[in-house]
Image (cartoon, rainbow over the protein chains, first blue to last red):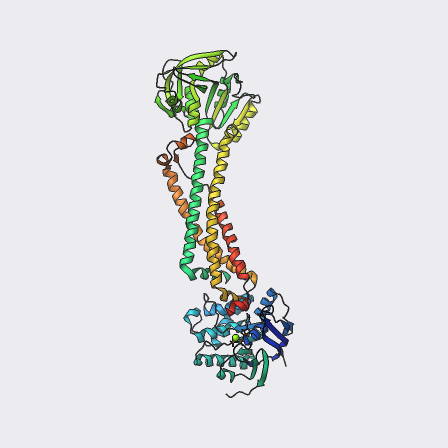
Amino acid sequence: MDTVIDAHNISKVYNPDTIPVHAVNNVHLHVERGEFTALVGPSGSGKTTLLNILGGLDHPTSGNVVINGTDITHLGSNKLIDFRLHNIGFVFQSFNLIPVLTARENVEFIMLLQNVPKKERDQRVVALLNEVGLSDKMDVRPAQLSGGQQQRVAVARALASKPQFILADEPTANLDSASAFNLLDIMAKLNREENMTFIFSTHDQRVIERARRVITLVDGSIASDTAQTKTD
Amino acid sequence: MITTIAWRNIWRNKTRSIVIMTSVALGLWAGAFIAALYWGMGQERMRIAIENEIAHLQVHAPDFTLEFTNIPAIANVNELTAQITAMQGVKAVSARTIAMGMLATATGSAGIQINGIEPNAEAATSQLKSKLKEGTYFETKKTNTVLVGAKLAKKLKLKLNSKVVLTFQDKEDNLVSAAFRVEGIYQSYNTALDERNVYVPITTLNNLLGLQHEAHEVAVLLQSDDLTPSVKAALAAQNPALKVQDWKEISPETGLILSTMGQASMVFVVIILLALAFGIINTMLMAVLERTREIGVLMALGMNKLKLFAMILTETFMLVMVGCPFGLLLAWAVIQLLARKGIDLTAIAGQTMQDFGFSNVIYPGLPASQYLQIVILVVITAVVSAFFPAIRALRLRPVEAIRG
Ligand SMILES: Nc1ncnc2c1ncn2[C@@H]1O[C@H](COP(=O)(O)OP(=O)(O)OP(=O)(O)O)[C@@H](O)[C@H]1O
Ligand SMILES: [Mg+2]
């Protein structure tokens, strides 16, 4: 098997000097390529904190995160930015598209940062937006898109850089259930057809049911980690 | 794409951006206008100094000074003036004899400089004839006539035909007094000079001083300012025994005024730009803070600090540079218009301008090099003011920015 994430004994303490908050406690996590994994747990259990650490957005207080063979725990901030650009895709709860760019430009932008040649960029943007079902909205700015459409652009953007895996922190929390299911369908299809690894946090029971692996966090520790066979 | 984002970001808050662009345009306009006003005044002073007072070049005896009672003279001056008149680029030549002395009337007296001049030559060199306010310009048959300045006339209550006595020392250091009639009263742009200088025919003064074919000063007016160094060099080479000086050497204060004017106007421009810089920094800081989350997302997605910095810098730069051409165009148009019409300051300044040797009408103007200088200053302002917001953006941490 092909390991993409190997997190070893990670802990995160906020405000260590005043009122320490142990947001993540001694978490060991191993993610293989092609996983479709949900991170669940009550509010404040440390899901966002853990995802940020796995995505190289935040440093753990202790422990190591190895991604695709590279230990990112002690990378400097510019190296880390570069590492994220080439290895990790992000989907955020509140979509966070660049408002002044069209759907097409939002997706292309990532490849531009990677210095992908123009021709390849153009082809890939079209292919990706097709895949998320937005070929008719390519030249529209985010403000003119529904939440579900924006989040699909965000997924296309996350895919654009050909990352090792995609982290999504509550990607459906701001969507109505139809849009949420539509998004999940797209993510599942990408997972199935392109073997793209997804790790997403959620509160939504119907979303949890779609995952093949469910990791439950309670007070910053892994309370359970179960594989489930798909119902559909 | 960075420039695209920067450009589109400018138009997100149209009102705010337009306010900044307008301020840049107006600031630039005001700065350029003030600089043009100063430049125009400086040029005017220079023109007056050259065309009405000093001329381009002056030739003196090597040890010439007005301090001595017996002022060193140039011998065979007629040959010299003939030689200079024949030179290329020379427009007019005037030989002058000078005596320092006193002018007395029945009721008062004043220390003065008596200038012996050949009327036609002097009229061509320093426009003395055109400065005449009252009376005539050496038209009577009488030899002992004098032109006095309006300021002096007022001070000593002189009228046309008033009798005055001029007293000075001759070549042999004997005190000479002679009676003169006021034939004319003149007024130049320089009240201080008017009060101190009186003009008499050179033949009369030479007779009284005991000089023959001699003069103390030869003023040379050229066809153009640019010829000054070359004619000066030629003249000096042909007359090694004489001292040849240009107007800047004769009147270093005029050169100083020119450079001071330039510096003073730049001080204004810098003050305006500083005020602009504060506005720009403020606006862009606001723009960065409003976009905290967005910038955090860009960093999360992999936009490195250099690119982020470049993006904010570009945005600020564009914001400033959009207003720049409008300001320049406005300034240029206004300056061109006023350069033709002139600004008459008589109503505001009265005589003050002339007391300092300036014309009452200013013709503003700005050479291309000064426009360029202002543009460079604006660019520097834009870049410097872009730094603070850009640095502020770099200090954002993506996790915190996204969490909000
Ligand atoms: N920047 C911070 N400073 C201090 N404490 C923090 C910070 N961020 C998170 N915490 C705390 O760490 C704990 C874990 O927070 P986290 O956001 O990771 O939980 P979560 O599982 O994502 O919650 P939710 O389901 O509400 O999104 C919480 O107690 C939270 O208050
Ligand atoms: Mg969370």
